[in-house]
Image (cartoon, rainbow, N blue to C red; front, side, top):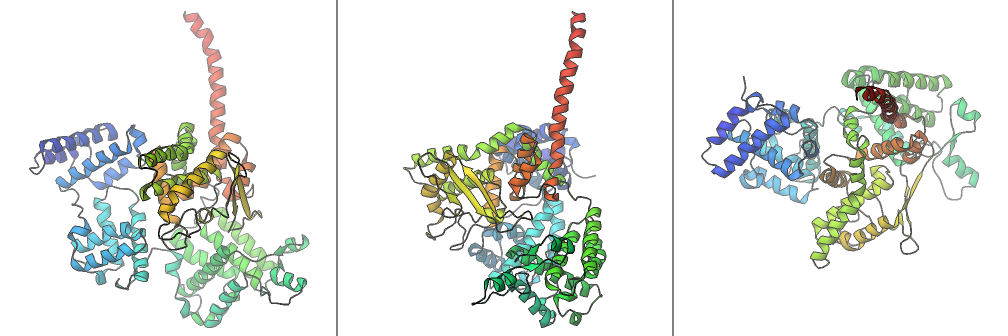
Length: 599
């Protein structure tokens, strides 16, 4: 039987290195943690990381009606008590205790992208404390560290942290000359499963390069001196399906993001067929050898299904991409083969359990906002409240802003724009003052937020636009004039509203997402990561309007698309509310005569 918190409290009380006051505070916090937060006596609460992770899943300061600071302090006391009781090891700071070799590598991280240090720091401390040299790190080392974290780490999402370590390590290999040159597996991802591109025949590589250069059109090269008809033939080509030909449909050039997905599908499918022993490398000579419905069938059945399960939606995506490539690039493809692609995709999609459903994790994170409109109201007020605090602080500083204040203002503007027009994060982080924001023509007037969408929606929408109320344009102007300059001191001509660390670049998806997510958590006690913003605002619009077509218009979806259908289950919430109101009124009418008789 393992240790319980009663023994942990006794260890703290007997610890000689603690002052009486500090020991009492830790004990009080631990008792409060057990009795109030978990709801059990200390002697009934297991003192191990696995149990505490299970207890604390989904916890927020709001759950216990405490501030973020109080919440962090209680958890700090719990961790310190567990260290005193030797349940979890002491977490040493790398800058104070690392050995010479790891210390040098850790110092190199300071000039690297800022996300690498927090990702790698725990792993570096682990390797240094166990005497593992940098050049000795392997996938087995990371797996051992994962086991170690599961045993001692109290925080959730350990799997995500391990993936971040692998990615950060590989990024360090690419950009830091002194870093060991062995790359780690990032898990069962398509990139890792792919064979090296140079292992395939040059003709296959050149065919993919030409497909990309022509943007998915066989006649896609536009040359000087072309007539309009010749240019039209190079820019568009007839669709291969009989249905579209009857309707006079044409295929246009693909967007860069779609081209990248198509190339990824080709490399993955070709690599899978070779890994599975169904083809030899030298047999893969052109796109036509891979963009085939039989290839898609074998890859899904023999590779994707055993690894990820048939419920993975990547199988359907792979079929769609290979079909599109085949229609565009394989002249001899028959209508029967196109039909086979269509029925294979339909079967694979029908077998996907989560198709058209909102993931449980997203549902739990959206619930505090969609089930409690007061919390949603707090979210909508964050930009104004944050700027009130910032402007008060700036006035105290003689009109000057610090970099920390500028980062807070940047996050507040991020919340403001996402609440106004929740475009995809790839477009959002590249927002420019001179391109995407049209300022009002008069003082106190209404501005405009406009994006030309980089990823064309299937319903043809390529632009998104929304009005900016006068108070919103005022906050954007304040940010641009007084706070953003602190973020561009070393890059004054950076054009982006959210400037990045590299000169002339926009802020990275992950960094901007962390800033906005943390600000929302500070004000509401709940997390809304970049992935959730569109679902949150779309779900709220559906809740207040009961109109799925409006949601589709806001998000750029077809009304019957799977992406929009995930919001249908939100209807059950307002349907249940409607039922409760009617049932409540009926019950009240039935109760009145009963109460009258009693009196």
